Image (tube, rainbow, N blue to C red):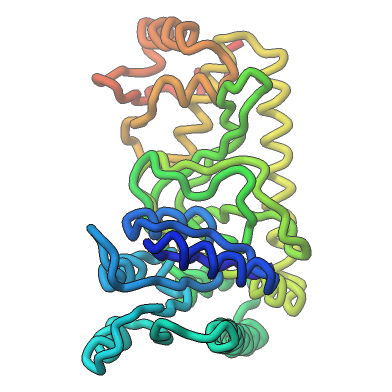
Length: 348
């Protein structure tokens, strides 16, 4: 079911259009507020946007500019629906990047035709890009390293600030990401609503892998732990690449198998290890993920460390203090510098 975001401040017209689109088989998200449109689009990833121009506070032109300046929304087809009929108003909307312009009042068939036309054109563009990607992969992508280069060269770029949500639990997974810069934590919630960090991903890691054959929703959520840059490729394209390149598929399977081994080790550690060992292993995990072998302090919240270790924050802080006294780490304000990795590996 295709998703449509409707931005219209006239409640009567908004309800009428919503009903028409609903009866036509679309899933509709609507708002009377242009300021909310971009946030809804980031969360729901609509297939197309219908937007009025004359709205209080934020008009349709400003809404389009916000969409065009955001990596996550700039590709979404955008149709103005407005009572403004002057030629210069139409030209202004198209020059800003609108895909179509409907003037009020309009016939139901006219609206539906415009929507289907834009969706079909979007599908054709995606198909062209997919074919281009298939040509590249058939001749050039022979290893996981080359797959990452493909993401870097041809992926859609996304930027997130520290603590921003990359994707939420329950959202449908449409893309696979390569982390170009930064660190991401993936989290779930226990029965009491406590956050549990399930994995840490950093630069040069893939993020967001779910089924490539089904559009399953995410079963966890991902948060940027520092300023983050991603390159995203649609799951359809990734699936096509892997189907044509057995070596790349095998390399990726090996990486995912190693990830599963690490997750199992983390679960066993959380279940059976002492608080000291949990803390030591978590410090090593973060050091490997965030520093990539560099001798730099870990800029990490104590709550995040405790979330991975599966212990109370107070217990972790006491153990960090013990490690500091033993000369295993140095605590610099809120940052932690690991001094003796070998000793941490043998903590019981």
